[in-house]
Length: 188
Image (cartoon, rainbow, N blue to C red; front, side):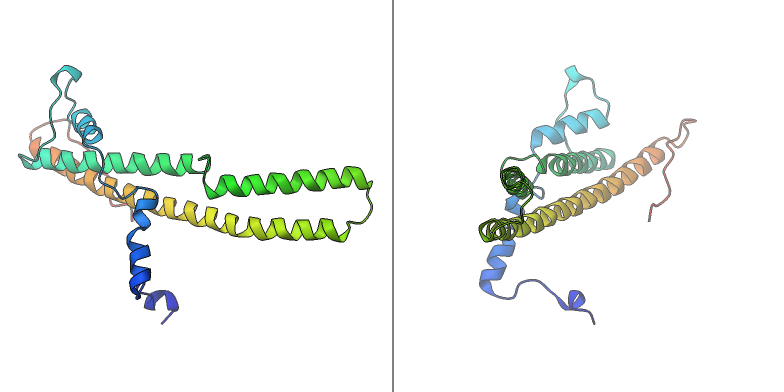
């Protein structure tokens, strides 16, 4: 059995405490705001702006609509987070870019001053220290990107399931309609 299959998460109290706070780091698993859910609920049901309706699960169609509205909010939040993260001022990607720019500027300046002479020990030491700073930042940026892509994938899957359930209820409600909704086949 591979180590990934055996891994079950943290086993120490400290590890469990750290793990339990992972979702607070980015907020992608937090409950969506009621206002956003209500807006999507009204859009999905095609309720005019003046006749705003509070989300409810009073019947199966409204319950499916509410589930779809929550899924839409989570999907768009995850999509926005993935797109905006690299540009966030305190992200690992921005820190890595800053270190890379500093290193590139120093090397370009050294090249201009030295006129192509081999680098001295101080320059090599500087490059080594900058690479030591850059490597963990680049690894953290990659971890963040993969995590956000995972949350986006989960949100996309939840959205697809909610949409399929909503379409099935719409189809059942419109049995005699000529304009039946087409439900796409499973995308597995």
